Image 1: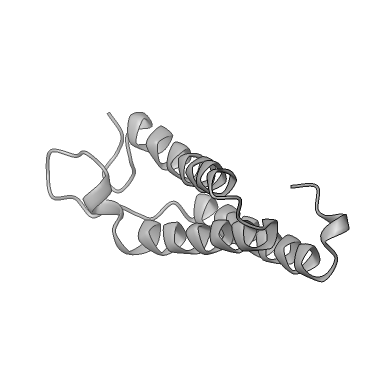
Image 2 (image 1 turned 120 degrees about the horizontal axis):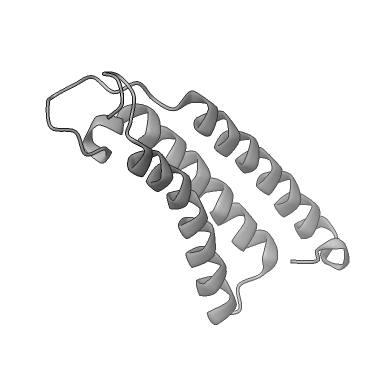
Length: 104
């Protein structure tokens, strides 16, 4: 049992797995419809920003707690996802300018 304001370990693992699932689903769909790599990377970056906003605004709706307790956002996870989004946008720009440099 965690202290009030934090999330349980199961919820923390779910918060960690959701971005991985989003990236994987976008990867599979983009390969299935043969989307160009810069569009795929841009979509993945947008997904990371959307998840970051969700993690700030709606964490209490995502976690499973018995009482109506104020849940603090996971700031480190949010910052990592935003850093990943910046990196994905950089790679998308690089891939769009010179497709031969894209290994994705």
